[in-house]
Amino acid sequence: MKVLGVVTEYNPFHNGHKYHIEKSKEITGCDATVAVMSGHFLQRGEPALLDKWRRAEMAVHSGVDLVLEIPTVYACATAEFFSYGSLQLLKGTGIVTDLSFGSEHGELPLLQKIAAILVQSPKQYEKYLKIALDRGSLFPAARSEALALYIKETTEIDKRESDELEKVLKSPNNILAIEYLKTLIRTKSSIKPHTFPRVNASYHDREIRGSIASATAIREHLLSGKSMDSLAGVLPQASYNLLASAIKEGTAPIFLHHFRDVLLGLLRRSSPRDLQSIFDVGEGIENRILDGGKKSTSVEALLENVKTKRYTYTRIQRILMHLLLNLSKEDLLSYNQSGGPKYLRVLAFNDRGRSLLKRMKKQSTLPIITNLKHYQPENPLEKSMLEYDLRGTDLFTLGMTDPDINTYHLEYKKRPHYVKT
Image (cartoon, rainbow, N blue to C red; front, side, top):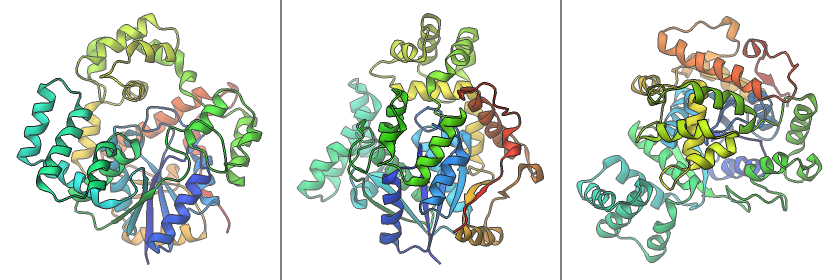
């Protein structure tokens, strides 16, 4: 049996995601689909729009058979750690045979060439990289320049690939695709990769038009206070209903600015040494963030005050999420050194997903969690990783718009959602 794996955030699940699942099944010939999905905090350093259980249910209503949660420590990490944690999770199921991901480039050969160079790190490539860095280029630009020089010098590529090379590393989904391929190489995974171009709406497209809009556009639409009615054409019916119900009950939408008081409070009480222990803090950025925290009165102003050409909005947001979660460098490195995720947490499934779970119980290399009340971590690393998940949910609920909703021990109240098919 061929089982498709996808790495997702579904924030929220829209028609573009539905197309991706349908197209992925078509090109891979897979019989079933497992999605590993970020929980309450996401890779770009933002809280999810609505809770992970509803987002997982959206996916199962629209073609996914089983949704597993990416542990919080990996879900909001840099692209390299995010991809490693996600693919180790898929590998840990023991049943996933294929991986599909969208990319702006849409073809594997060039992406695989780049991934192989970055894993092998040849001396000539390192030489070009050092020259570019010594000249003052920022790392992403220096890496692109070094890769272009190395590939053109050592590989026969046609003009189309040569032209594409200049653009590939500037697009977020291409960068993530390369990280997936790097992880597959490094871990000697047997999972077979597939990619194809994204359709219609780009990753950063902020317009609602046609039947496919980006998740960014959907979130921006809600952030600006516009009506849900305009989203009916870009969301599957189940997604629309679940999002509407969450908004009606006051548990959504959730945005970064809802954590203003917590984040500014943490920054105003912290020292440079405190921030230095947080994952992804380095190069003196802690001083700039702390200074921004003292003179800013909103998260938006904080981002503007800290951002430079060197420190992007995304990196700053991600550091803020790490600070909120108190995610230390030491912990994440320890998880990676011991093989990544320590368990498989089930969020939603259908009948086919139930069959997949039965197979996983026999073939998985990781424990499967369906009910936290019946789960006991086997070692300290497993326990501390789970504690980040629990902490993440407790903090996430602070952003809910209705302050009177009882969210105490929410992780222990919620069970995986079964969608009858």
